[in-house]
Length: 229
Image (cartoon, rainbow, N blue to C red; front, side, top):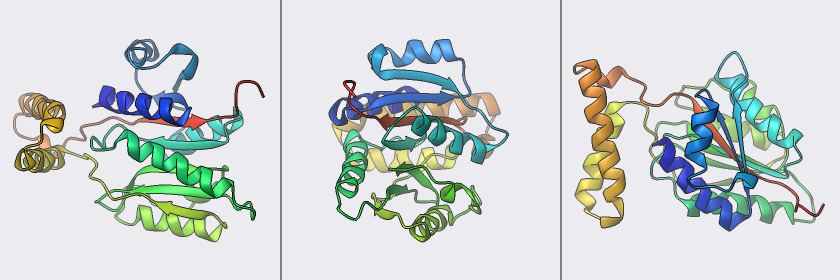
């Protein structure tokens, strides 16, 4: 699933003229080798996550990109397999439209998950608002985050809700839906879900529903000023 997320991001990055940063808890060298299958080295950064908990690591991904001079930052995870390059391009487009407004308000985009969280967050300017007083892991994360950004004066665009995979139960539900739709375009994802479920069932001897299938791998996709600036 991680490579699928990278491949999706690579296509969107090309269309949106974006750079890609992968902020990971995994091995940096192997992550880079994997990413280079899909991305040119001059548009790619691999960094280790920094922070004591999820909130600090997630906030740190945004802070690092804006500190590096990025003008728009969109952060996703690797556990939303139906996320498409069109979704990512749409996120950047919404930030671009808001940035071009005469009132110069900061803008944000959020992609809510079906469980109440979110699979994507994009900002045109850094703020601590999305990370203060938000209880990550609850069923109101998306609405609380949206309210916090609104209170800070951000114009907010919302993407369609998508399913993220927090455990084998979610993976099975998505697999059933994909099989019911019977679309050829979903064949690769169907195969990946089948392999994933087979692996977890084998390893955990039927206790897969309690497994968090995806470690915290939070790639960030950021667009900065043109190279000539």
